[in-house]
Amino acid sequence: MENNVTQRHLSIFEQIRRIDEYGVEFWLAREFGKVLEYTDFRNFLNVIDKAREACENSRQSILDHFVEINEMVSIGSGAERALPSVKLSRYACYLIVQNADPSKEIVANGQTYFAVQTRIAEIKQMNEYTRLNTEDEKRLFLRNELTRHNIQLADAAKGAGVIEPRDYAIFQNHGYQGLYGGLGAQDIHKRKGLKKSQKILDHMGSTELAANLFRATQTEEKLRREQIKGKNKANKTHYDVGAKVRQTIKELGGTMPESLPVAESIKSIETKQHKRLK
Image (cartoon, rainbow, N blue to C red; front, side, top):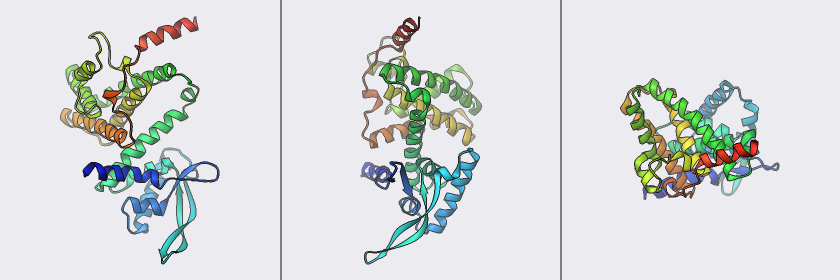
């Protein structure tokens, strides 16, 4: 029953997504507010104003993401009336759910959904990524991104009180357990049939690397944003973020990361690339 509720909440964001005459996706504010369980649109406008402010603080153009329009709203008996509303981009929706009432389950699910989708969109918009054609090229790109973000994650974890190498290993394991349905690093290693000398990250395909990249970036941001302190709280944060990413993969009909196939060692791909460059 609970999974059905979650499925309904997550899928509704796609159900109300619209496409304009130029092929650009958007959401309508009044419709979006109702999904987020705001019965009074005036209250939802306060959330939109906070999202606009966050957009401006991020040095993004507000007009690119929030467009004033009139939205046709049903007033009963099949009649409709045009009321002031806002045409929202995916990024605007992301900012709105970040500023909405976090006590609502639908808002929490929306935060996960739009964070995942926004991050995927960011990756796809990167010039380097859009030029990549093969799986090997995508793996190399994502693996390098993950290496870079793991350094930033380690710094954020250190700020939260995860200092010793052993404590950091435990911290990392919690992230894996959340994303991989309770499996820690050793369990994943065994499940994938890897040898002792083989590293998990070096044998992930682009889909699995992208999931782990999102886990790392979102955990880092959450640790810093909420100024989380203490090893136990940091571990729980990493686990919870991993679990949220897993939940989203499930609701979108994706394959669970532990069930994705083992890929060729990325070291072999790097060697091939170096030879080609020479």
